[in-house]
Length: 557
Image 1: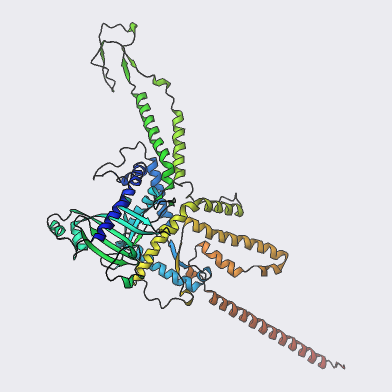
Image 2: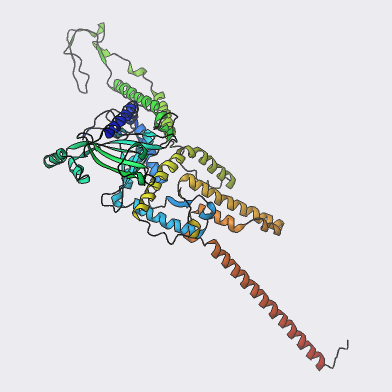
């Protein structure tokens, strides 16, 4: 299908977006060269086998980037541990065991979808974590795979993507350049593939064809027969063969299809920045220069530059190890040395450089939040009170919030939201007939397991322990104070802080029913005991009367 003038206009608009982003690509290239050399191909071409970090004198900045990139996955998406749970906006509903158990089952289904071997979820998020750390954003697509039996996650190079926001600061338009091999081109678009590419695929199946994927609001593109379903499909997805002016695919779409988490944004720009690399860039450059200077100084100290003071040296000075320099035998050294060092290396004193390097390395670690992501130890050997430990956790939350909050909301939240919606479209969660009544009509949101969330939940557990100790002391003084504390509610709120799963907790109505049964049983036992005690007293009275009668003693009253 040949492209219309409207699509050509869209391509021109996308080219304008890429042109505006050109200076930012140059900045990202500089950052990548210092901190993420494997991704330093924004403005330079890489060849297979090329050494990535040959221009660096030290790998400390690269290691700082690597440590934070690895920490994102290990702390926010730990394998072998449920790192997200489906919840509603109503905490009272979330605390009900029946609702929580149902939501946890759906969360387990979604985890299986994500970590399916064919989904490439781990690969995509690992690449996304490194992009997010270095450049402050990542572009991850979430699509149904080719066989429509699962999902496929892919991280795209920031160089190849450009986007813009609407008036509500939501990304609603994205252009992505895509070089696809001719064989895959024909496989993915068998009906609309260009005849030229079909011929190329026969002779050179690995030839790359320049294409572009465009996602934009349906109101900006007139798609045939789209008017009736525009409310359900507010976006349009278009694949274009840019080399052959061919529309490969155009269809309505419910969502953007891309998750673009952004770390720190500034007004007036749709692109984010990484506070880690922005702050650490000058220190990284300085550290490279200092390391180079120290290396040169060490080389000069070991192998100092020489100067020839007389014209009697034959063939120049050979200062390499084992080198022999010949001097005219008639030369008298009482007139001066024929060869001597140009610099007196005995005066070199570079002891200050080590401390300076350590200081800059510490600044780089601080810029990458590596001093923040370590969770304060809960047990300090008995030197700190529980209150002091709680204060440390609160301080940790305040310091870690700028780091974890964007990652939880935009990164993990975006991935979970897109996965859940696509899973619902595929029917992966099965029928919803077993949904508890209190969940019907509720909007599903996501709660994540992170050091920040763990600190919050642990704070509830610590508060429960402190309140229990206070209650114990107060009850010894006044037993009636035990009625001032709702132990059941407090215990249920504190349990998640211990990591207890929802299925361990008995639903409130069942727990209340069990308590009522227990109270009824206790009341029945108490009544039976009272009847038995009354019978025993009556029996004792009867025996005493018989004994009095036998003794001839009668009571006249």
